[in-house]
Length: 411
Ligand code: CTP
Ligand code: MN
Ligand code: MN
Ligand code: MN
Image (cartoon, rainbow, N blue to C red):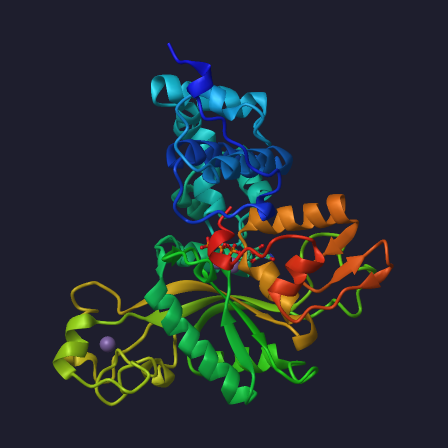
Protein backbone atom coordinates (compact mmCIF):
# COMPACT_ATOMS: atom_id res chain seq x y z
CA UNK A 1 0.00 0.00 0.00
CA UNK A 2 1.31 3.39 -0.98
CA UNK A 3 1.00 6.10 1.60
CA UNK A 4 -0.26 9.03 -0.39
CA UNK A 5 1.60 11.53 1.72
CA UNK A 6 4.87 10.00 0.53
CA UNK A 7 4.07 10.25 -3.15
CA UNK A 8 5.88 13.09 -4.80
CA UNK A 9 3.34 14.89 -6.92
CA UNK A 10 4.93 16.48 -9.99
CA UNK A 11 4.22 19.96 -11.17
CA UNK A 12 5.26 21.62 -14.42
CA UNK A 13 4.20 24.81 -16.22
CA UNK A 14 1.56 24.38 -18.94
CA UNK A 15 3.46 25.57 -21.98
CA UNK A 16 6.50 23.67 -23.26
CA UNK A 17 8.21 27.03 -23.87
CA UNK A 18 8.14 27.65 -20.11
CA UNK A 19 10.03 24.43 -19.46
CA UNK A 20 13.57 23.20 -19.96
CA UNK A 21 13.50 19.98 -21.94
CA UNK A 22 16.84 18.32 -22.55
CA UNK A 23 17.50 15.40 -24.90
CA UNK A 24 17.70 13.05 -21.93
CA UNK A 25 14.64 12.52 -19.83
CA UNK A 26 13.42 10.27 -17.03
CA UNK A 27 10.34 8.90 -18.79
CA UNK A 28 11.50 7.69 -22.17
CA UNK A 29 9.19 4.70 -22.35
CA UNK A 30 6.07 6.72 -21.58
CA UNK A 31 7.09 9.65 -23.78
CA UNK A 32 7.92 7.28 -26.61
CA UNK A 33 4.55 5.54 -26.37
CA UNK A 34 2.66 8.85 -26.51
CA UNK A 35 4.87 10.05 -29.36
CA UNK A 36 3.93 6.97 -31.35
CA UNK A 37 0.25 7.75 -30.86
CA UNK A 38 1.00 11.33 -31.93
CA UNK A 39 2.76 10.06 -35.02
CA UNK A 40 -0.16 7.78 -35.82
CA UNK A 41 -2.63 10.66 -35.50
CA UNK A 42 -0.46 12.80 -37.79
CA UNK A 43 -0.24 9.96 -40.29
CA UNK A 44 -4.05 9.85 -40.22
CA UNK A 45 -4.02 13.59 -40.95
CA UNK A 46 -5.57 14.33 -37.55
CA UNK A 47 -3.26 17.11 -36.46
CA UNK A 48 -5.35 18.18 -33.48
CA UNK A 49 -5.06 14.76 -31.89
CA UNK A 50 -1.42 14.65 -32.88
CA UNK A 51 -0.66 17.88 -31.03
CA UNK A 52 -2.53 16.68 -27.93
CA UNK A 53 -0.35 13.56 -27.76
CA UNK A 54 2.81 15.61 -28.50
CA UNK A 55 1.98 17.97 -25.62
CA UNK A 56 1.40 15.06 -23.27
CA UNK A 57 4.67 13.40 -24.31
CA UNK A 58 6.47 16.70 -23.72
CA UNK A 59 5.06 16.98 -20.19
CA UNK A 60 6.45 13.53 -19.38
CA UNK A 61 9.84 14.46 -20.84
CA UNK A 62 9.95 17.48 -18.51
CA UNK A 63 9.36 15.53 -15.25
CA UNK A 64 12.30 15.45 -12.81
CA UNK A 65 11.99 11.71 -12.05
CA UNK A 66 10.50 8.53 -13.50
CA UNK A 67 6.75 8.21 -12.99
CA UNK A 68 5.94 5.25 -10.72
CA UNK A 69 2.39 5.99 -9.71
CA UNK A 70 -0.64 7.60 -11.33
CA UNK A 71 -1.06 9.77 -8.25
CA UNK A 72 2.08 11.67 -9.15
CA UNK A 73 0.39 12.92 -12.30
CA UNK A 74 -2.50 14.64 -10.56
CA UNK A 75 -2.85 18.20 -11.71
CA UNK A 76 -0.29 17.96 -14.50
CA UNK A 77 -1.25 19.90 -17.64
CA UNK A 78 -2.01 18.36 -21.05
CA UNK A 79 -2.71 14.84 -19.76
CA UNK A 80 -6.21 13.94 -20.91
CA UNK A 81 -8.12 10.75 -20.12
CA UNK A 82 -6.80 9.01 -23.20
CA UNK A 83 -3.17 9.72 -22.31
CA UNK A 84 -3.71 8.77 -18.67
CA UNK A 85 -5.16 5.43 -19.79
CA UNK A 86 -2.06 4.72 -21.88
CA UNK A 87 0.26 5.67 -19.04
CA UNK A 88 -1.68 3.53 -16.55
CA UNK A 89 -1.51 0.57 -18.90
CA UNK A 90 2.26 0.91 -19.16
CA UNK A 91 2.80 1.40 -15.43
CA UNK A 92 0.70 -1.67 -14.64
CA UNK A 93 1.62 -4.09 -17.44
CA UNK A 94 4.83 -2.72 -18.96
CA UNK A 95 3.23 -1.99 -22.31
CA UNK A 96 0.23 -0.20 -23.79
CA UNK A 97 -2.13 -2.44 -25.73
CA UNK A 98 -3.16 0.51 -27.88
CA UNK A 99 0.43 1.36 -28.77
CA UNK A 100 1.26 -2.26 -29.53
CA UNK A 101 -1.87 -2.68 -31.67
CA UNK A 102 -1.03 0.52 -33.56
CA UNK A 103 2.50 -0.64 -34.26
CA UNK A 104 1.20 -3.94 -35.63
CA UNK A 105 -1.57 -2.45 -37.74
CA UNK A 106 -1.19 -2.75 -41.51
CA UNK A 107 -2.52 0.75 -42.00
CA UNK A 108 0.01 2.35 -39.66
CA UNK A 109 2.82 0.40 -41.30
CA UNK A 110 1.71 1.37 -44.80
CA UNK A 111 1.21 5.04 -43.89
CA UNK A 112 4.66 5.11 -42.31
CA UNK A 113 6.38 3.54 -45.30
CA UNK A 114 4.62 5.75 -47.84
CA UNK A 115 4.93 9.06 -45.95
CA UNK A 116 8.53 8.03 -45.35
CA UNK A 117 9.08 8.90 -49.00
CA UNK A 118 10.33 12.49 -49.25
CA UNK A 119 7.56 14.52 -50.88
CA UNK A 120 4.71 12.27 -49.75
CA UNK A 121 2.27 13.56 -47.12
CA UNK A 122 -0.55 11.94 -45.19
CA UNK A 123 -3.20 12.72 -47.79
CA UNK A 124 -1.27 11.24 -50.69
CA UNK A 125 -0.39 8.15 -48.68
CA UNK A 126 -4.05 7.62 -47.73
CA UNK A 127 -5.07 7.90 -51.38
CA UNK A 128 -2.50 5.33 -52.43
CA UNK A 129 -3.59 2.95 -49.67
CA UNK A 130 -7.16 3.22 -50.97
CA UNK A 131 -5.74 2.09 -54.30
CA UNK A 132 -4.25 -0.96 -52.58
CA UNK A 133 -0.69 0.31 -52.39
CA UNK A 134 1.05 -0.57 -49.11
CA UNK A 135 4.70 -0.97 -50.05
CA UNK A 136 7.38 0.77 -52.08
CA UNK A 137 7.39 -2.06 -54.58
CA UNK A 138 3.62 -1.84 -55.03
CA UNK A 139 4.02 1.89 -55.59
CA UNK A 140 6.77 1.34 -58.17
CA UNK A 141 4.65 -1.27 -59.95
CA UNK A 142 1.45 0.78 -59.82
CA UNK A 143 2.41 3.21 -62.53
CA UNK A 144 1.19 6.11 -60.39
CA UNK A 145 2.61 9.42 -61.54
CA UNK A 146 5.08 10.77 -59.03
CA UNK A 147 6.15 14.39 -58.87
CA UNK A 148 9.83 15.32 -59.01
CA UNK A 149 10.23 15.36 -55.21
CA UNK A 150 8.57 11.96 -54.83
CA UNK A 151 10.69 10.46 -57.60
CA UNK A 152 13.83 11.65 -55.83
CA UNK A 153 12.41 10.45 -52.52
CA UNK A 154 11.77 6.99 -53.86
CA UNK A 155 15.12 6.81 -55.62
CA UNK A 156 17.03 7.75 -52.45
CA UNK A 157 14.66 6.10 -49.99
CA UNK A 158 17.26 4.01 -48.18
CA UNK A 159 19.85 6.76 -47.84
CA UNK A 160 17.29 9.25 -46.59
CA UNK A 161 16.29 6.79 -43.86
CA UNK A 162 19.83 6.56 -42.55
CA UNK A 163 20.31 9.00 -39.71
CA UNK A 164 22.59 11.91 -40.55
CA UNK A 165 25.50 12.18 -38.09
CA UNK A 166 26.81 15.42 -36.62
CA UNK A 167 30.07 14.82 -38.52
CA UNK A 168 28.12 14.60 -41.78
CA UNK A 169 26.16 17.71 -40.83
CA UNK A 170 29.44 19.57 -40.24
CA UNK A 171 30.85 18.44 -43.59
CA UNK A 172 27.72 19.67 -45.33
CA UNK A 173 28.02 22.89 -43.32
CA UNK A 174 31.48 23.43 -44.79
CA UNK A 175 30.15 22.90 -48.30
CA UNK A 176 27.25 25.30 -47.76
CA UNK A 177 29.64 27.86 -46.26
CA UNK A 178 31.90 27.62 -49.29
CA UNK A 179 28.93 28.03 -51.60
CA UNK A 180 27.60 31.01 -49.71
CA UNK A 181 30.85 32.97 -49.38
CA UNK A 182 31.71 32.20 -53.02
CA UNK A 183 28.57 33.94 -54.25
CA UNK A 184 28.29 36.59 -51.50
CA UNK A 185 31.37 37.38 -49.41
CA UNK A 186 30.46 38.27 -45.84
CA UNK A 187 27.30 36.18 -45.82
CA UNK A 188 26.85 33.95 -42.79
CA UNK A 189 25.64 30.38 -42.35
CA UNK A 190 24.20 28.99 -39.11
CA UNK A 191 23.29 25.40 -38.37
CA UNK A 192 19.71 25.25 -37.05
CA UNK A 193 17.16 22.46 -36.46
CA UNK A 194 17.87 19.45 -34.27
CA UNK A 195 21.65 19.71 -34.52
CA UNK A 196 21.54 23.19 -32.97
CA UNK A 197 19.58 21.66 -30.09
CA UNK A 198 22.46 19.27 -29.52
CA UNK A 199 21.05 16.19 -31.23
CA UNK A 200 23.80 13.81 -32.36
CA UNK A 201 21.83 12.60 -35.38
CA UNK A 202 19.02 13.96 -37.51
CA UNK A 203 16.74 13.20 -40.42
CA UNK A 204 18.12 16.19 -42.31
CA UNK A 205 20.43 19.18 -41.87
CA UNK A 206 18.99 22.69 -41.56
CA UNK A 207 20.84 25.94 -42.30
CA UNK A 208 19.91 29.58 -41.99
CA UNK A 209 21.77 32.08 -44.17
CA UNK A 210 21.96 35.85 -43.78
CA UNK A 211 24.17 38.88 -44.46
CA UNK A 212 25.01 41.60 -41.90
CA UNK A 213 23.95 44.31 -44.36
CA UNK A 214 20.16 44.39 -44.81
CA UNK A 215 19.15 43.69 -48.39
CA UNK A 216 22.43 42.12 -49.46
CA UNK A 217 20.83 38.67 -48.99
CA UNK A 218 18.28 39.36 -51.73
CA UNK A 219 18.60 36.93 -54.61
CA UNK A 220 21.16 34.89 -52.72
CA UNK A 221 19.43 31.51 -52.82
CA UNK A 222 19.43 30.96 -56.60
CA UNK A 223 23.13 31.81 -56.69
CA UNK A 224 23.94 29.40 -53.87
CA UNK A 225 21.90 26.69 -55.57
CA UNK A 226 23.64 27.32 -58.91
CA UNK A 227 27.03 27.06 -57.24
CA UNK A 228 26.11 23.82 -55.49
CA UNK A 229 24.63 22.44 -58.69
CA UNK A 230 27.72 23.33 -60.74
CA UNK A 231 29.88 21.49 -58.22
CA UNK A 232 27.71 18.39 -58.41
CA UNK A 233 26.50 18.54 -54.83
CA UNK A 234 22.77 18.46 -55.51
CA UNK A 235 20.72 15.39 -56.34
CA UNK A 236 17.48 17.35 -56.02
CA UNK A 237 16.40 20.85 -55.08
CA UNK A 238 13.29 22.92 -55.03
CA UNK A 239 13.61 26.61 -54.27
CA UNK A 240 10.71 28.71 -53.13
CA UNK A 241 11.22 32.43 -53.27
CA UNK A 242 10.53 34.89 -50.50
CA UNK A 243 6.87 35.83 -50.45
CA UNK A 244 6.72 37.67 -47.11
CA UNK A 245 6.85 41.22 -48.43
CA UNK A 246 4.35 40.76 -51.19
CA UNK A 247 2.05 38.64 -49.07
CA UNK A 248 -0.92 40.37 -47.53
CA UNK A 249 -1.03 38.48 -44.29
CA UNK A 250 -0.69 41.55 -42.13
CA UNK A 251 0.87 41.30 -38.71
CA UNK A 252 3.63 38.79 -38.11
CA UNK A 253 1.69 35.64 -38.33
CA UNK A 254 1.02 34.40 -41.84
CA UNK A 255 -2.34 32.78 -42.53
CA UNK A 256 -0.67 29.42 -42.17
CA UNK A 257 2.26 28.76 -39.89
CA UNK A 258 4.44 28.18 -42.89
CA UNK A 259 6.92 31.01 -43.10
CA UNK A 260 7.70 32.86 -46.26
CA UNK A 261 11.45 32.95 -46.47
CA UNK A 262 13.34 32.12 -49.58
CA UNK A 263 14.03 28.47 -48.95
CA UNK A 264 15.45 25.45 -50.64
CA UNK A 265 14.50 21.87 -49.85
CA UNK A 266 17.26 19.74 -51.25
CA UNK A 267 18.94 16.38 -51.38
CA UNK A 268 22.73 16.60 -51.18
CA UNK A 269 25.15 14.11 -52.57
CA UNK A 270 27.64 13.64 -49.78
CA UNK A 271 30.90 11.84 -50.47
CA UNK A 272 31.49 9.40 -47.66
CA UNK A 273 34.57 9.92 -45.58
CA UNK A 274 36.66 6.80 -45.89
CA UNK A 275 38.59 6.42 -42.65
CA UNK A 276 41.30 3.97 -43.75
CA UNK A 277 41.93 5.86 -46.94
CA UNK A 278 42.38 9.10 -45.14
CA UNK A 279 44.84 7.44 -42.84
CA UNK A 280 46.76 5.73 -45.62
CA UNK A 281 47.06 8.84 -47.68
CA UNK A 282 47.61 10.90 -44.59
CA UNK A 283 46.98 14.19 -46.29
CA UNK A 284 44.33 16.47 -44.96
CA UNK A 285 43.88 20.04 -45.98
CA UNK A 286 43.50 22.47 -43.10
CA UNK A 287 39.72 22.34 -43.27
CA UNK A 288 39.90 18.63 -42.63
CA UNK A 289 38.79 17.66 -46.11
CA UNK A 290 40.98 15.46 -48.21
CA UNK A 291 42.89 17.23 -50.93
CA UNK A 292 41.48 16.59 -54.40
CA UNK A 293 44.64 15.27 -55.99
CA UNK A 294 45.09 12.55 -53.42
CA UNK A 295 41.81 10.77 -53.43
CA UNK A 296 38.51 10.77 -55.12
CA UNK A 297 36.95 10.81 -51.69
CA UNK A 298 37.62 14.49 -51.63
CA UNK A 299 34.60 16.72 -51.68
CA UNK A 300 35.64 18.17 -55.00
CA UNK A 301 35.98 15.04 -57.04
CA UNK A 302 32.38 15.20 -58.12
CA UNK A 303 33.20 18.42 -59.95
CA UNK A 304 34.55 16.44 -62.85
CA UNK A 305 31.63 14.08 -62.86
CA UNK A 306 29.12 14.93 -65.57
CA UNK A 307 26.42 12.93 -63.82
CA UNK A 308 26.33 13.56 -60.11
CA UNK A 309 24.13 10.57 -59.43
CA UNK A 310 26.81 8.16 -60.57
CA UNK A 311 30.11 9.39 -59.26
CA UNK A 312 33.04 8.07 -61.14
CA UNK A 313 36.45 7.85 -59.60
CA UNK A 314 39.07 9.51 -61.71
CA UNK A 315 41.73 8.24 -59.36
CA UNK A 316 39.37 5.94 -57.59
CA UNK A 317 41.19 2.80 -58.40
CA UNK A 318 43.09 3.08 -55.12
CA UNK A 319 39.97 1.74 -53.47
CA UNK A 320 37.33 -0.56 -54.66
CA UNK A 321 34.16 0.80 -53.13
CA UNK A 322 32.17 0.53 -56.34
CA UNK A 323 33.47 -2.97 -57.11
CA UNK A 324 32.62 -4.36 -53.71
CA UNK A 325 29.17 -2.93 -54.01
CA UNK A 326 29.22 -0.11 -51.49
CA UNK A 327 28.72 3.32 -52.89
CA UNK A 328 31.14 6.07 -52.00
CA UNK A 329 28.45 8.68 -51.52
CA UNK A 330 25.11 8.98 -49.84
CA UNK A 331 22.04 11.18 -50.22
CA UNK A 332 21.25 13.60 -47.38
CA UNK A 333 18.24 15.90 -46.98
CA UNK A 334 19.30 19.51 -46.50
CA UNK A 335 17.10 22.57 -45.85
CA UNK A 336 18.43 26.03 -46.64
CA UNK A 337 16.67 29.24 -45.60
CA UNK A 338 17.70 32.82 -46.34
CA UNK A 339 16.67 35.59 -43.96
CA UNK A 340 17.35 39.34 -44.00
CA UNK A 341 19.36 40.38 -40.94
CA UNK A 342 16.42 42.37 -39.52
CA UNK A 343 14.45 39.13 -39.16
CA UNK A 344 17.38 36.89 -38.34
CA UNK A 345 16.65 36.39 -34.62
CA UNK A 346 13.06 35.40 -35.39
CA UNK A 347 14.18 33.06 -38.16
CA UNK A 348 16.81 31.48 -35.92
CA UNK A 349 14.28 30.94 -33.14
CA UNK A 350 11.71 29.62 -35.62
CA UNK A 351 14.05 27.17 -37.33
CA UNK A 352 15.73 25.76 -34.25
CA UNK A 353 12.67 23.83 -33.09
CA UNK A 354 11.58 21.52 -31.75
CA UNK A 355 8.35 21.69 -33.73
CA UNK A 356 6.32 21.43 -30.54
CA UNK A 357 8.44 24.08 -28.80
CA UNK A 358 7.75 26.43 -31.73
CA UNK A 359 4.08 25.73 -31.65
CA UNK A 360 3.97 26.37 -27.92
CA UNK A 361 5.84 29.66 -28.29
CA UNK A 362 3.23 30.86 -30.76
CA UNK A 363 0.40 29.61 -28.54
CA UNK A 364 1.93 31.38 -25.53
CA UNK A 365 2.36 34.59 -27.51
CA UNK A 366 -1.22 34.54 -28.78
CA UNK A 367 -3.14 33.37 -25.73
CA UNK A 368 -1.09 34.77 -22.88
CA UNK A 369 0.40 37.93 -24.38
CA UNK A 370 -1.92 38.95 -27.25
CA UNK A 371 1.11 38.90 -29.52
CA UNK A 372 1.68 37.24 -32.89
CA UNK A 373 4.96 35.44 -33.31
CA UNK A 374 6.31 34.10 -36.59
CA UNK A 375 9.73 33.30 -38.01
CA UNK A 376 9.71 36.84 -39.39
CA UNK A 377 8.55 39.09 -36.58
CA UNK A 378 6.73 39.64 -33.30
CA UNK A 379 3.66 41.84 -33.32
CA UNK A 380 2.14 43.23 -30.13
CA UNK A 381 -1.62 43.52 -30.57
CA UNK A 382 -1.99 45.66 -27.44
CA UNK A 383 0.47 48.28 -28.59
CA UNK A 384 -0.34 47.72 -32.26
CA UNK A 385 3.32 47.61 -33.18
CA UNK A 386 6.14 45.25 -34.07
CA UNK A 387 8.68 44.47 -31.36
CA UNK A 388 12.21 44.42 -32.69
CA UNK A 389 14.83 41.92 -31.61
CA UNK A 390 18.38 41.16 -32.63
CA UNK A 391 18.76 38.05 -30.46
CA UNK A 392 16.68 35.11 -29.29
CA UNK A 393 17.14 36.38 -25.72
CA UNK A 394 15.32 39.60 -26.62
CA UNK A 395 12.41 37.67 -28.12
CA UNK A 396 11.98 35.58 -24.97
CA UNK A 397 12.12 38.80 -22.95
CA UNK A 398 9.44 40.45 -25.13
CA UNK A 399 7.29 37.37 -24.57
CA UNK A 400 7.79 37.52 -20.80
CA UNK A 401 9.50 34.12 -20.82
CA UNK A 402 12.67 32.98 -19.15
CA UNK A 403 15.32 32.38 -21.81
CA UNK A 404 15.56 28.73 -22.81
CA UNK A 405 18.75 27.81 -24.70
CA UNK A 406 18.51 25.55 -27.78
CA UNK A 407 19.70 22.45 -25.89
CA UNK A 408 16.67 22.78 -23.60
CA UNK A 409 14.11 23.24 -26.38
CA UNK A 410 13.83 19.49 -27.02
CA UNK A 411 10.14 19.33 -26.14
N1 CTP B 1 10.29 24.22 -40.05
C1 CTP B 1 9.53 25.24 -40.53
N2 CTP B 1 8.84 25.10 -41.70
C2 CTP B 1 8.90 23.94 -42.38
C3 CTP B 1 9.67 22.88 -41.92
C4 CTP B 1 10.37 23.05 -40.73
O1 CTP B 1 9.49 26.30 -39.91
N3 CTP B 1 8.20 23.82 -43.52
C5 CTP B 1 11.02 24.40 -38.80
C6 CTP B 1 10.45 23.53 -37.71
O2 CTP B 1 9.45 24.22 -37.02
C7 CTP B 1 11.64 23.27 -36.85
C8 CTP B 1 12.83 23.40 -37.80
O3 CTP B 1 12.33 23.96 -38.98
O4 CTP B 1 11.74 24.29 -35.89
C9 CTP B 1 13.50 22.08 -38.05
O5 CTP B 1 12.58 21.16 -38.58
P1 CTP B 1 12.97 19.68 -38.95
O6 CTP B 1 14.21 19.65 -39.75
O7 CTP B 1 11.78 19.06 -39.55
O8 CTP B 1 13.16 18.98 -37.53
P2 CTP B 1 14.40 18.88 -36.55
O9 CTP B 1 13.96 19.44 -35.26
O10 CTP B 1 15.61 19.48 -37.17
O11 CTP B 1 14.59 17.34 -36.34
P3 CTP B 1 15.29 16.29 -37.36
O12 CTP B 1 16.54 15.85 -36.69
O13 CTP B 1 14.30 15.18 -37.49
O14 CTP B 1 15.53 16.98 -38.66
MN1 MN C 1 16.16 18.98 -39.13
MN1 MN D 1 14.36 20.39 -41.88
MN1 MN E 1 36.27 7.03 -55.14
